Image (tube, rainbow, N blue to C red; front, top):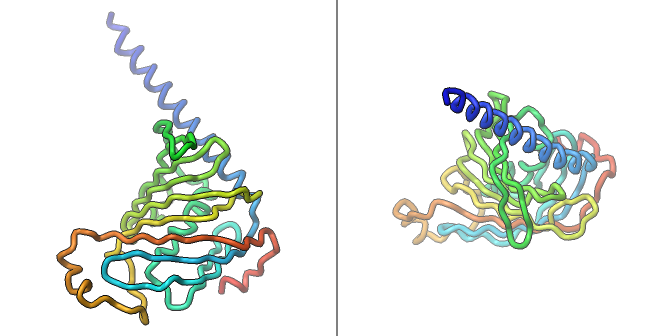
Length: 223
């Protein structure tokens, strides 16, 4: 009977090692998909919803190049957490993380595997991310806690793009960690009530179109 606790310990140790290995395999599949995209350019339409500021729909240009070059070009547009829009790409290409398998969960009609990702780089702004990944290695949802930008989440929608790039990303972010852009029309009455409001989150919906993939973007684009 004394061997039972030891056997249970070994069982859970083995289960934990299997779960971590499974999570690493899933992340490896996502990385393989992303590594096929050396660079891309896309048009973006951004709609931001917050309680205390009126923001017109904005047009933007998005540029990405491996491994971590990213430019989100939209004049006077600082409220959207730009890091969140491309975080799923840059964070997953970097393999210096600890990944832990949590469970399966259905999003819409898509079966996903939920994993926790902890960056090992002490300089990373990301503290912890949770990702919902489909069986064809697309990220459908993520939630991240950061050191400097609060907590945000993103949900991704896909069409039939051959490179598995998203058609839409809906980002929910911490307003208190966002910078109010100059030149937007403020709702002053709502702004005065901001400190009394319990709603401290904003939502940005980014729709992508016109992807140009692997065109050999110059580094000068990101300067």
